[in-house]
Image 1 (spheres, rainbow, N blue to C red):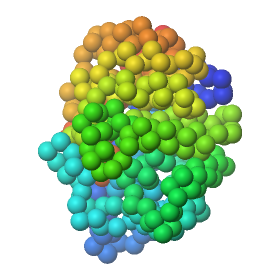
Image 2: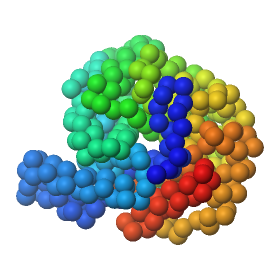
Image 3: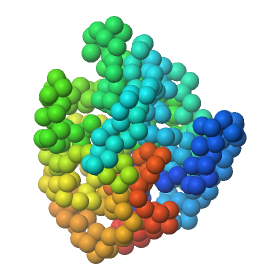
Image 4: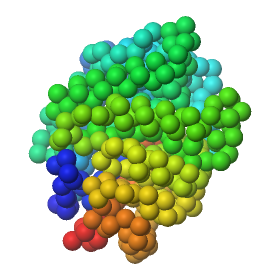
Length: 371
């Protein structure tokens, strides 16, 4: 079992961790295809999902992880499935996908069509099932950050003519959601966010300006909304954030180190930990970690890529952890893959065996570093 420590809010922090999504199994892919074609019912699909989630939870335990996820097996997307099930949000076929490096996703979009609320969100039941099969392990659940509804969604101006009212309702909606997950048993919630990676990239910021969006305004409003949403949360609820530069079929969207947002994020966002991508040169150096000014803020280093199957050199990973410890105390550092293995149902270009080998590699290295 890997070492863990306790932060000020008494949450468990695991030296070996994971971002969350896992490659969809053949059984899941076949079942979802049959459901689309009308060959099986929603209840039959859910039964197959239950069986496969129980299987991959057991596999996570076997490789040595203490925080287990459902692999996002019930989702097509890491973000849209959650967001379009909020009250006031509709999903639609947008006519074009999200552009990655030399690849584009399938068509999907979201739009805000009425006042926001959390409601009886279907993913509460998804969490409850994960909680049951996790048993003596921590059930970790992943949802998109509230920033993603603004960043990816179309907002009806007749519903929210005042954008500050939109952000206020968004924070209240997430606050209700966070409490609902907690009441369902959740003690480890991760917010996934690609908007901050765009705000790290000069190229992407220029594209935002061309669309009439002010990056400085986005930084201000996203921080304010996030902090309002997580304020007054229960002391034993651990909330982390994964900052992603894009992950679709082993490709990416943005490049750039954390320097331009580090002071705001690490110094002013009141969460318990950050999952940071550090698997290649596009992610920049560790210098921005100098802005970590809290002894209870954990930094999970994503030094192991989830995009390809080859295992990283163990000594190189340990060396990079030592480099990061020049800026943040080693006791605040943890290790994980840089992203999930299947942010969308299509998945990255590696095998399930390679995926499990990656996660076991993370566990074994963490045991050596944090003895």
